[in-house]
Length: 128
Image (cartoon, rainbow, N blue to C red; front, side, top):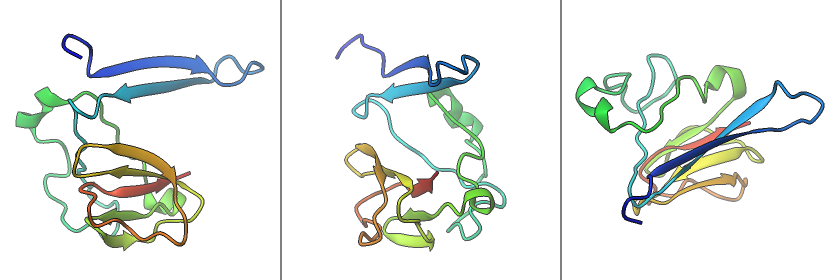
């Protein structure tokens, strides 16, 4: 793995009939990267701590990727859970991002029978 990039990105067109639609995809080597969550000023509504509401300047040199407003609760009823504690309900059938303490990250379909995993260290986030 030495010398290989920790992040690889590509794009592809999802619809032959609509070539203007472009999907962006990234692969992150979880052994060399980590996930962090910085809740916004208002979202999610019941965040445990607002903190700086943005990535602190002294940590930005480490960024590979960031996005703003990807999981707006008001727009999609997106749930959140941190360390096994539910802040907004995760919705069955929606895709969920889960980051585990060992560095693994998974995107999986949320199932009503599951409960937030207390071994995850970053939020499980349901998204449409």
